[in-house]
View 1 (cartoon, rainbow, N blue to C red):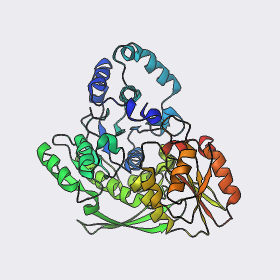
View 2 (tube, one colour):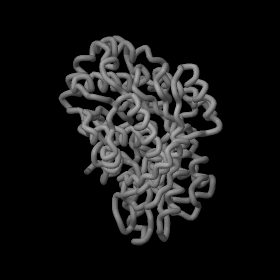
View 3 (cartoon, rainbow, N blue to C red):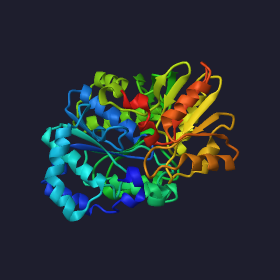
View 4 (cartoon, rainbow, N blue to C red):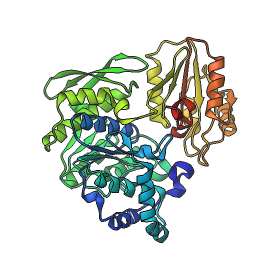
Length: 418
């Protein structure tokens, strides 16, 4: 699986996914869907939309990746994970095809999600891409709406070395006549998305041109966002239990998407929108987005793992009062480690660690790379040992952040034991 070993696990075409769907009697054609891609924010947007649909009374499927602790996190209906029995039943059913075509882990999982959503008779399924868009296994659906949150530098060895190249891959989810929402207007990618939308006869919306947003209140557990509708002048305040400052952009993307979905017939009342966004974590079980794990000292975990994600963490630091910063970091081997470390403050205390997967960069190697650019710290072969050391070293008014890898966050005991 890609989560464990990286690019070697990928199949760069849709052939196996199509064969799996055919074997399952094409469940992807029997459900209504929303398709979401993007470098950062696609998981948050997926969960927020799922929560809104649930509060609006729709039976809602949600497919996301990767999981943090339990594989079943990837496939949910109304916030409840797929049962172990359903996973086992599906696996036995599809085993002959697996042996015949040797699909990837992700290809099988996508088939499982589509099949389960049909079995559960969902009204709508929110489908998050795994990587890219054009050749992603999820890209066999004809959705009600496509969404691309933003474009940044991640998985460049697979998707391309420029924002333009990456945007072309993400734009592959834009389907003929299906509306598309873009979360962030970027000069390098705007023309690419507009050209693809014209080619496909799709109406395109840029969320940051529909809404301006500012954080009116921010705490470790909540964010209040003030939004202005550029078209109508309407002012509204939305509170979210996903308290990262970066969520204000994601909320604008969700609101724009809801506007488009209402135009095609979905009934999403204002109460469902405010309640859904306000209780996303509680409703969908989302983990790893600016999670408050303890107070005094403040301990936060976040799955930020690329340049844009780390930059958002640094913006958030300006909103928090603390004495000293402690950073518990672990990365995957395929990241630009020096570029990521160069972003971080030199005066923080560093605790280098790793996830227990083959794709992880060894903690000693991370420490050595950091030392080469004058960032000193201790190293630990387990994230929990690193956190324990940070907690022992930190004063009550200090701040500890754990980030750098989804898989490092997934191994935190405080998350596992929830």
